[in-house]
Image (tube, rainbow, N blue to C red; front, side):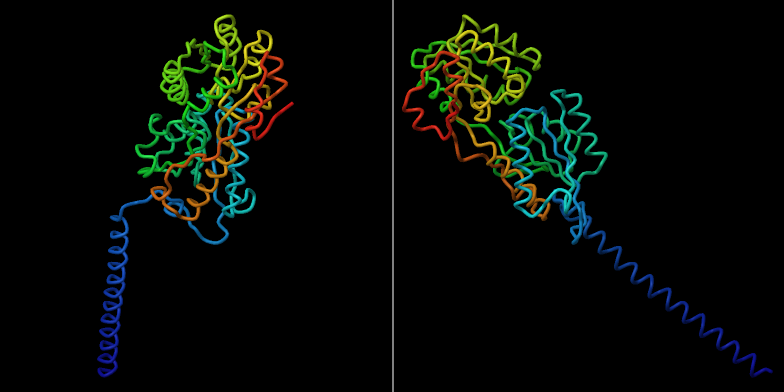
Length: 356
């Protein structure tokens, strides 16, 4: 019995020692894991989808896509963005889900859309136009954002360097040399002396392109300038009407408010023989006399391709802001006739598309 008791005691001691060794081994493994995690935490974060989303096969990425209002230019760009994503292998309903939201011209709604995308924890946000990109940036400071049709990204406070995005935003801008537009007006209407600048003074893109670029350049070229502003699409007709009898031509750049209410301007132009000349090529089919501007399909494709690269893990800092490199001249002969313009043959010869 003594031997049995001693044997029992020995077994107990051995079990205790084994248990202690096991605890020490587990503690050692745990210490290694903690150290690894701490090291990873101290490395500089990069704004990529990979940093917030598992990039495994079968992942369906959640994309927030938004624009300020519906008009042909923005709609064309939106479809081109979706096409650009497809070029990179991302297709809605397969490996991405696109949540499209339209602000309907109301920036209070735009702000809500930005917050919705943040609450929904979208993997990536794509915004069309300056005001919508500003709203998305404010609500989603750490989420990858790709913009399209933003005129002056630096002036709009979205980033500091187009060539080296340092934050969570990159995209495609549509700022270009306004001389092209003014040269078109001079060639189309050699007798024109006074230009009516029609825009929304509340749009940062129009301040950059119209106030800071077009107005001083027009004055430099010898034109007189009359300005008319509209804060909403409901005010566009009255603003256009205020130019009657005061200008020889109405100039519209890429202002979203004016372009969304373009039909009202075109009616004023046709009723009063005042030609309407645009920077936005997609507005020519709607009834503007002419436009020399960027290809909106090309810009949309570029934005979509950028978004695709980000989904694949490319850091935003490695994707500089881009722009269109191809410009197009489009002419509408019916609109020209309605507004009392005879289009020179030299311009018709240069046009990539002539509507009749």
